[in-house]
Image (cartoon, rainbow over all chains, first blue to last red; front, side, top):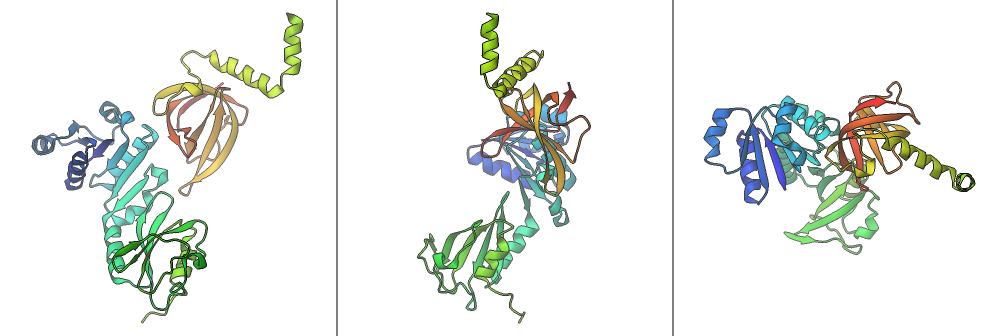
Length: 223
Length: 119
């Protein structure tokens, strides 16, 4: 796959190295020539010295033949401009953008050409929540139209002891896996979920509340 | 010969005749390609007639989507942040230049904010 990464900061360079090792055709766009001169010897990818926020330089970089664009600069404005140009001018199929400041997360959506946004603080909160919370719905991953949520069933969960078929998961949601005692169980209709199970559900924003009601139940008073 | 043509005109369905006429109109433009021949992600110019207009919310802001056909195929032109554009109405013919992205399950060609010219 052909991947273009804008910004050769720590994040950009790391992604570039990782993707190159995975066998992808990687190009890094960075406007600082000194930085490129320093990194060129350590990282064997295609380098392109240009301002990634400029349509003409993106043209020269050949963005029209790229499959994925990663906007990984340390500046949210730049990342948004790069995403918008990649999507609207070059019709790049997949645009991934880094959110530096969590307050800007709401901007990183379809309107700006962003398919997937990655916000480190949000990711960290999700991981922390996942580790400490039992009996509440935790959002793990956000996709374009769906999100992956996780619930560790508490003793009071209305779902405990029911089979997947009995649960009656809404149409726009699906239980993708049940993790029990460090084993992954592929759920079938007759699979019974128990207290302490980690249930991973793929939901749409619309069906999320319904799934929450099914697996978590009514909101419990804080203890 | 004249009779044969008249017979053909009278027996062929109207929609087919319309498509034929539209195709002839669109083919005559210099520099333009037919929609079916426009590959995704390649910059090109097409001529077509607007068959439908929709206002679609995209992440909270409106965008105007026009389906354009030239008798060989169809594509969708999207103007972001607009509810209406003067002159862009169903039935209008226009020249559109831009780069299309194949989107959706049917891989429909979609062009964002192209340069266009009403005919």
